[in-house]
Image (tube, rainbow, N blue to C red):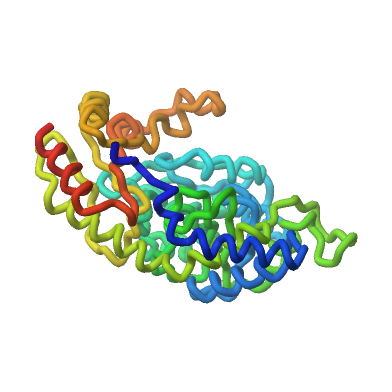
Length: 359
């Protein structure tokens, strides 16, 4: 069986380095907010060309804390509207709700699946104060158009970059990253961070993640406990120097998929610029998803669905269940994610392509 994502194989080359790092952490005896977290924060800030990196517990916390920090700075107020994509993982929406803000959903571009800038202006009201952009599947959203709208209407822009480590980011926006094990840069457990060029925002975020405290036992804000731990930071420091090489391998596989899969029953993703996609996922569409997934399974190929049910149809959000987002709903009915990782062999890729073409 060709695994959708073979995490054991992905992490195998780093095991010796992981063990050495683990021993170093044990020898230091410092397990929370120590030298390893500081080292990773400095290296990831440098890698993303950001002034500041704030390590946190996971990607969801990263987004929630950005919104809470903007509230503390007086740039947002509880109840403000944040424009967000209807086509996303529910974490994006949960972040807005958990900060006591109001998500306003808009449809995606039907070809890239990302936030459609042409849909934004119609949803802007006097209560709109921000735009949450998700770089879905690892493809950069149309930031030039979105940033222009943000500037015209004086809106904050927050980027959910959970699936997008390695993209060429531009603009002074706060970005939330997840290092969940399956991400392009994955920890060996939950982990996340925020990057920003805004020193005032960073100062609040460093406090908020640690009980709202800038100095131990003195609390400036009503904070939370969401700290990137020393061990995960150490593991991420081992893997970060290899991220570009691994993303390049993903792109080479994506290139083969895009040029060699030829089946009228299967729609391939649109990618006009390989510099703006890190292929966290390679997502195809078909009207016969159940049949295709079963057929691939019978032929030794594991696939996943990202995502079977859009946020507005989830049981957790009953007030939204009657809303209609036809493009989003069609995408969620038809998408199927193919195996995509830097450890797929050329033979495995050939088998996947061959089976898809025979379907």
